Amino acid sequence: MKRHLFAAIAASISMSMLTGAYAEQGPKMMLLPKFLGILPFDQTHKGAEEAAKELGGEIKYVGPTAENSVAGQIEFVSNAKTQGVNAIMIANNAGDQIAPSAKAAKDAGIKVVTWDSPIPSAVGEDLFIADVDFGKIGVVLADMALHTLGPEGGEFAIIGGSPNAPNQRAWIASMKEAIKQPKYSKLKLMDVVYGNDTSETSYNQAQALLDKYPNLKLIEAPNNIGLAAAAKALQDEGVCGKVKVSGLGIPAEMVAYTKSGCAPEFAFWSFTDLGYLTYYTTYLLATGKIKAVEGQTFKAGRMGQYTITKDPDRKAGLRIVMGPFTIYNKTNVEAAARQ
Image (cartoon, rainbow, N blue to C red):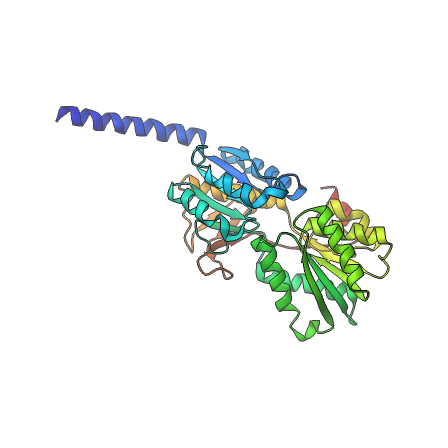
Protein backbone atom coordinates (compact mmCIF):
# COMPACT_ATOMS: atom_id res chain seq x y z
CA MET A 1 0.00 0.00 0.00
CA LYS A 2 2.80 2.41 0.91
CA ARG A 3 4.61 1.61 -2.29
CA HIS A 4 1.47 2.45 -4.32
CA LEU A 5 0.96 5.66 -2.35
CA PHE A 6 4.60 6.66 -2.89
CA ALA A 7 4.29 5.94 -6.61
CA ALA A 8 1.14 8.05 -6.84
CA ILE A 9 2.78 10.94 -5.00
CA ALA A 10 5.88 10.68 -7.19
CA ALA A 11 3.75 10.67 -10.32
CA SER A 12 1.84 13.69 -9.03
CA ILE A 13 5.05 15.59 -8.32
CA SER A 14 6.43 14.64 -11.73
CA MET A 15 3.27 15.85 -13.48
CA SER A 16 3.30 19.04 -11.42
CA MET A 17 6.89 19.72 -12.44
CA LEU A 18 6.03 19.01 -16.07
CA THR A 19 3.02 21.33 -15.94
CA GLY A 20 5.11 24.04 -14.35
CA ALA A 21 7.80 23.72 -17.00
CA TYR A 22 5.17 23.82 -19.75
CA ALA A 23 3.59 26.93 -18.28
CA GLU A 24 6.98 28.61 -18.04
CA GLN A 25 8.17 27.71 -21.53
CA GLY A 26 4.86 27.91 -23.34
CA PRO A 27 3.61 25.64 -26.11
CA LYS A 28 5.65 24.65 -29.14
CA MET A 29 3.66 25.68 -32.18
CA MET A 30 4.14 24.96 -35.88
CA LEU A 31 3.24 27.68 -38.39
CA LEU A 32 2.68 25.93 -41.70
CA PRO A 33 1.95 28.05 -44.81
CA LYS A 34 0.80 26.64 -48.11
CA PHE A 35 4.44 26.78 -49.13
CA LEU A 36 7.53 28.85 -48.41
CA GLY A 37 8.91 31.74 -50.39
CA ILE A 38 6.12 34.26 -50.92
CA LEU A 39 5.61 37.58 -49.17
CA PRO A 40 2.14 37.14 -47.59
CA PHE A 41 3.25 34.05 -45.67
CA ASP A 42 6.44 35.79 -44.55
CA GLN A 43 4.22 38.61 -43.28
CA THR A 44 2.10 36.05 -41.44
CA HIS A 45 5.25 34.74 -39.75
CA LYS A 46 6.19 38.29 -38.76
CA GLY A 47 2.78 38.80 -37.14
CA ALA A 48 2.99 35.46 -35.33
CA GLU A 49 6.41 36.38 -33.96
CA GLU A 50 4.97 39.64 -32.65
CA ALA A 51 2.29 37.73 -30.74
CA ALA A 52 4.85 35.19 -29.49
CA LYS A 53 6.93 37.99 -27.94
CA GLU A 54 3.86 39.09 -26.00
CA LEU A 55 2.63 35.65 -24.94
CA GLY A 56 5.64 33.33 -24.96
CA GLY A 57 5.84 29.95 -26.62
CA GLU A 58 7.90 28.80 -29.56
CA ILE A 59 7.21 29.09 -33.30
CA LYS A 60 8.52 26.60 -35.83
CA TYR A 61 7.99 28.23 -39.23
CA VAL A 62 8.21 25.39 -41.73
CA GLY A 63 6.66 24.49 -45.05
CA PRO A 64 6.98 22.66 -48.34
CA THR A 65 7.92 24.02 -51.75
CA ALA A 66 5.20 25.20 -54.10
CA GLU A 67 5.76 22.14 -56.29
CA ASN A 68 5.31 19.76 -53.35
CA SER A 69 2.74 21.73 -51.40
CA VAL A 70 0.02 19.10 -50.95
CA ALA A 71 2.20 16.11 -50.07
CA GLY A 72 4.59 18.34 -48.13
CA GLN A 73 1.87 19.79 -45.92
CA ILE A 74 0.48 16.33 -45.18
CA GLU A 75 3.95 15.12 -44.22
CA PHE A 76 4.53 18.03 -41.81
CA VAL A 77 1.19 17.45 -40.09
CA SER A 78 1.75 13.68 -39.93
CA ASN A 79 5.12 14.20 -38.23
CA ALA A 80 3.96 16.87 -35.79
CA LYS A 81 3.60 14.48 -32.86
CA THR A 82 7.14 13.11 -33.19
CA GLN A 83 8.40 16.72 -33.39
CA GLY A 84 6.93 17.45 -29.97
CA VAL A 85 4.53 20.07 -31.34
CA ASN A 86 1.62 21.19 -29.15
CA ALA A 87 -0.29 23.07 -31.84
CA ILE A 88 -0.34 23.39 -35.63
CA MET A 89 -1.36 26.55 -37.49
CA ILE A 90 -1.90 25.62 -41.13
CA ALA A 91 -2.94 27.46 -44.30
CA ASN A 92 -4.40 24.38 -45.92
CA ASN A 93 -3.53 23.79 -49.57
CA ALA A 94 -4.45 20.11 -49.68
CA GLY A 95 -8.23 20.17 -49.41
CA ASP A 96 -9.64 17.22 -47.47
CA GLN A 97 -6.58 15.14 -48.33
CA ILE A 98 -5.03 16.52 -45.17
CA ALA A 99 -7.99 15.62 -42.95
CA PRO A 100 -6.74 12.14 -41.85
CA SER A 101 -3.38 13.57 -40.76
CA ALA A 102 -5.05 16.49 -39.03
CA LYS A 103 -7.43 14.15 -37.20
CA ALA A 104 -4.54 11.97 -36.05
CA ALA A 105 -2.75 15.03 -34.73
CA LYS A 106 -5.88 16.27 -32.96
CA ASP A 107 -6.51 12.81 -31.46
CA ALA A 108 -2.95 12.96 -30.12
CA GLY A 109 -3.80 16.12 -28.20
CA ILE A 110 -2.39 18.62 -30.70
CA LYS A 111 -4.49 21.72 -31.37
CA VAL A 112 -5.11 22.17 -35.10
CA VAL A 113 -5.99 25.69 -36.22
CA THR A 114 -6.30 26.65 -39.89
CA TRP A 115 -5.81 30.16 -41.28
CA ASP A 116 -6.37 31.69 -44.71
CA SER A 117 -7.63 28.36 -46.06
CA PRO A 118 -9.55 25.77 -43.97
CA ILE A 119 -10.10 22.02 -44.11
CA PRO A 120 -13.34 21.76 -46.16
CA SER A 121 -14.90 19.02 -44.02
CA ALA A 122 -13.44 20.51 -40.80
CA VAL A 123 -12.31 16.97 -39.86
CA GLY A 124 -9.28 17.24 -37.58
CA GLU A 125 -9.66 21.00 -37.25
CA ASP A 126 -10.36 22.86 -34.00
CA LEU A 127 -10.91 26.31 -35.48
CA PHE A 128 -10.49 28.35 -38.67
CA ILE A 129 -9.11 31.91 -38.65
CA ALA A 130 -10.73 33.49 -41.72
CA ASP A 131 -9.04 36.49 -43.32
CA VAL A 132 -12.45 37.88 -44.27
CA ASP A 133 -15.98 36.58 -44.72
CA PHE A 134 -15.74 34.19 -47.69
CA GLY A 135 -19.30 34.98 -48.73
CA LYS A 136 -18.44 38.67 -49.16
CA ILE A 137 -15.31 38.13 -51.25
CA GLY A 138 -17.33 37.35 -54.37
CA VAL A 139 -19.18 40.66 -54.10
CA VAL A 140 -15.93 42.58 -53.58
CA LEU A 141 -14.39 40.91 -56.65
CA ALA A 142 -17.52 41.52 -58.72
CA ASP A 143 -17.71 45.16 -57.64
CA MET A 144 -14.08 45.75 -58.59
CA ALA A 145 -14.64 44.08 -61.96
CA LEU A 146 -17.67 46.28 -62.65
CA HIS A 147 -15.87 49.40 -61.47
CA THR A 148 -12.86 48.59 -63.67
CA LEU A 149 -14.87 47.81 -66.80
CA GLY A 150 -17.60 50.39 -66.35
CA PRO A 151 -21.36 50.01 -66.89
CA GLU A 152 -20.85 48.49 -70.33
CA GLY A 153 -19.11 45.50 -68.75
CA GLY A 154 -17.47 42.97 -71.03
CA GLU A 155 -15.70 39.62 -71.13
CA PHE A 156 -13.47 38.55 -68.26
CA ALA A 157 -11.65 35.45 -67.08
CA ILE A 158 -10.37 34.23 -63.72
CA ILE A 159 -6.89 32.96 -62.87
CA GLY A 160 -7.07 31.06 -59.58
CA GLY A 161 -4.18 29.89 -57.45
CA SER A 162 -4.16 26.19 -56.64
CA PRO A 163 -7.26 24.16 -57.54
CA ASN A 164 -6.67 22.19 -54.32
CA ALA A 165 -6.88 25.29 -52.09
CA PRO A 166 -10.27 25.50 -50.36
CA ASN A 167 -10.13 29.29 -50.15
CA GLN A 168 -9.55 29.66 -53.90
CA ARG A 169 -12.44 27.36 -54.75
CA ALA A 170 -14.71 29.17 -52.29
CA TRP A 171 -13.77 32.65 -53.47
CA ILE A 172 -14.25 31.80 -57.14
CA ALA A 173 -17.59 30.13 -56.37
CA SER A 174 -18.58 33.23 -54.40
CA MET A 175 -17.83 35.50 -57.36
CA LYS A 176 -19.73 33.23 -59.74
CA GLU A 177 -22.73 33.48 -57.44
CA ALA A 178 -22.40 37.26 -57.07
CA ILE A 179 -22.41 37.99 -60.80
CA LYS A 180 -25.81 36.29 -61.14
CA GLN A 181 -27.31 39.46 -59.68
CA PRO A 182 -28.84 41.92 -62.19
CA LYS A 183 -26.29 44.55 -61.18
CA TYR A 184 -23.54 42.50 -62.85
CA SER A 185 -25.49 41.37 -65.92
CA LYS A 186 -22.99 43.02 -68.28
CA LEU A 187 -20.08 40.97 -66.88
CA LYS A 188 -19.47 37.87 -68.99
CA LEU A 189 -17.28 35.17 -67.42
CA MET A 190 -15.48 33.34 -70.22
CA ASP A 191 -13.14 30.95 -68.39
CA VAL A 192 -11.60 29.88 -65.09
CA VAL A 193 -8.01 28.66 -65.15
CA TYR A 194 -5.43 28.00 -62.43
CA GLY A 195 -1.85 29.18 -62.08
CA ASN A 196 -0.97 26.58 -59.44
CA ASP A 197 0.45 29.31 -57.19
CA THR A 198 3.50 29.87 -59.40
CA SER A 199 4.38 33.06 -61.25
CA GLU A 200 5.46 31.24 -64.41
CA THR A 201 2.28 29.19 -64.78
CA SER A 202 0.06 32.19 -63.95
CA TYR A 203 1.94 34.32 -66.49
CA ASN A 204 1.52 31.66 -69.17
CA GLN A 205 -2.17 31.26 -68.34
CA ALA A 206 -2.68 35.01 -68.74
CA GLN A 207 -1.03 34.94 -72.17
CA ALA A 208 -3.15 31.95 -73.18
CA LEU A 209 -6.32 33.77 -72.16
CA LEU A 210 -5.35 36.77 -74.31
CA ASP A 211 -4.87 34.47 -77.30
CA LYS A 212 -8.05 32.50 -76.71
CA TYR A 213 -10.39 35.43 -76.09
CA PRO A 214 -9.59 38.38 -78.39
CA ASN A 215 -12.38 40.48 -76.83
CA LEU A 216 -11.22 39.89 -73.26
CA LYS A 217 -11.29 43.07 -71.18
CA LEU A 218 -10.35 41.88 -67.70
CA ILE A 219 -8.43 39.16 -65.88
CA GLU A 220 -9.55 38.66 -62.30
CA ALA A 221 -7.03 36.93 -60.02
CA PRO A 222 -8.15 36.19 -56.44
CA ASN A 223 -4.56 35.44 -55.39
CA ASN A 224 -1.50 37.66 -55.15
CA ILE A 225 0.78 35.49 -57.32
CA GLY A 226 -1.73 35.33 -60.15
CA LEU A 227 -2.52 39.04 -59.93
CA ALA A 228 1.10 40.20 -60.24
CA ALA A 229 1.90 37.61 -62.94
CA ALA A 230 -1.15 38.54 -65.01
CA ALA A 231 -0.32 42.23 -64.75
CA LYS A 232 3.22 41.54 -65.96
CA ALA A 233 1.88 39.49 -68.87
CA LEU A 234 -0.41 42.32 -69.96
CA GLN A 235 2.41 44.82 -69.64
CA ASP A 236 4.81 42.65 -71.63
CA GLU A 237 2.20 42.16 -74.34
CA GLY A 238 1.53 45.90 -74.46
CA VAL A 239 -2.23 45.50 -74.00
CA CYS A 240 -2.83 47.37 -70.74
CA GLY A 241 -4.81 49.96 -72.68
CA LYS A 242 -7.27 47.27 -73.74
CA VAL A 243 -7.18 44.65 -70.95
CA LYS A 244 -6.96 45.23 -67.20
CA VAL A 245 -6.36 43.05 -64.15
CA SER A 246 -7.99 43.11 -60.75
CA GLY A 247 -8.29 40.79 -57.77
CA LEU A 248 -6.44 40.20 -54.53
CA GLY A 249 -2.82 41.23 -54.16
CA ILE A 250 -0.05 42.86 -52.16
CA PRO A 251 0.50 46.62 -52.52
CA ALA A 252 4.30 46.24 -52.54
CA GLU A 253 4.06 44.00 -55.61
CA MET A 254 1.41 46.02 -57.44
CA VAL A 255 2.54 49.66 -57.20
CA ALA A 256 3.97 49.92 -60.72
CA TYR A 257 1.05 48.10 -62.32
CA THR A 258 -1.51 50.25 -60.52
CA LYS A 259 0.25 53.51 -61.40
CA SER A 260 0.55 52.44 -65.06
CA GLY A 261 -3.16 51.62 -65.27
CA CYS A 262 -2.69 47.88 -65.82
CA ALA A 263 -4.25 47.12 -62.43
CA PRO A 264 -6.41 50.15 -61.56
CA GLU A 265 -7.92 48.54 -58.48
CA PHE A 266 -7.34 45.52 -56.26
CA ALA A 267 -8.05 44.45 -52.68
CA PHE A 268 -6.28 42.77 -49.79
CA TRP A 269 -5.96 42.57 -46.02
CA SER A 270 -3.06 42.47 -43.58
CA PHE A 271 -1.31 39.10 -43.39
CA THR A 272 0.77 40.49 -40.52
CA ASP A 273 -2.45 40.95 -38.56
CA LEU A 274 -3.59 37.48 -39.65
CA GLY A 275 -0.40 35.94 -38.28
CA TYR A 276 -0.76 37.84 -35.02
CA LEU A 277 -4.39 36.78 -34.58
CA THR A 278 -3.67 33.17 -35.54
CA TYR A 279 -0.83 32.79 -33.04
CA TYR A 280 -2.73 34.58 -30.30
CA THR A 281 -5.84 32.43 -30.74
CA THR A 282 -3.89 29.18 -31.04
CA TYR A 283 -1.84 30.00 -27.95
CA LEU A 284 -5.03 30.54 -25.92
CA LEU A 285 -6.40 27.20 -27.17
CA ALA A 286 -3.15 25.32 -26.54
CA THR A 287 -2.85 26.65 -22.99
CA GLY A 288 -6.49 25.94 -22.15
CA LYS A 289 -7.44 29.59 -21.66
CA ILE A 290 -10.24 29.27 -24.23
CA LYS A 291 -12.08 26.38 -25.87
CA ALA A 292 -12.98 25.86 -29.51
CA VAL A 293 -16.73 26.04 -28.97
CA GLU A 294 -19.44 28.21 -30.46
CA GLY A 295 -20.01 31.36 -28.43
CA GLN A 296 -16.54 31.46 -26.86
CA THR A 297 -15.38 35.08 -26.61
CA PHE A 298 -11.84 36.31 -26.03
CA LYS A 299 -9.54 39.27 -26.51
CA ALA A 300 -6.65 38.81 -28.93
CA GLY A 301 -4.22 41.51 -27.82
CA ARG A 302 -4.09 44.55 -30.10
CA MET A 303 -6.62 42.95 -32.48
CA GLY A 304 -9.42 43.26 -29.97
CA GLN A 305 -12.44 41.11 -29.15
CA TYR A 306 -13.56 38.01 -31.07
CA THR A 307 -16.33 35.42 -30.83
CA ILE A 308 -16.16 31.88 -32.17
CA THR A 309 -19.12 31.13 -34.43
CA LYS A 310 -20.30 28.38 -36.72
CA ASP A 311 -18.80 28.60 -40.19
CA PRO A 312 -21.67 29.28 -42.63
CA ASP A 313 -19.61 27.81 -45.48
CA ARG A 314 -18.86 24.50 -43.71
CA LYS A 315 -21.49 22.60 -41.74
CA ALA A 316 -19.05 21.14 -39.21
CA GLY A 317 -16.64 24.08 -39.00
CA LEU A 318 -16.04 26.80 -36.43
CA ARG A 319 -14.43 30.11 -37.26
CA ILE A 320 -13.52 33.64 -36.28
CA VAL A 321 -13.35 36.36 -38.96
CA MET A 322 -10.53 38.89 -38.95
CA GLY A 323 -11.46 41.39 -41.71
CA PRO A 324 -11.65 43.94 -43.16
CA PHE A 325 -10.90 44.40 -46.86
CA THR A 326 -8.90 47.36 -48.10
CA ILE A 327 -9.34 48.53 -51.70
CA TYR A 328 -6.13 49.83 -53.28
CA ASN A 329 -5.77 52.20 -56.24
CA LYS A 330 -3.55 55.11 -57.29
CA THR A 331 -4.57 57.14 -54.25
CA ASN A 332 -3.26 54.78 -51.59
CA VAL A 333 -1.13 52.00 -53.08
CA GLU A 334 2.24 53.73 -52.65
CA ALA A 335 1.67 54.53 -48.99
CA ALA A 336 0.51 50.95 -48.34
CA ALA A 337 3.56 49.52 -50.11
CA ARG A 338 5.88 51.37 -47.71
CA GLN A 339 4.31 49.81 -44.62
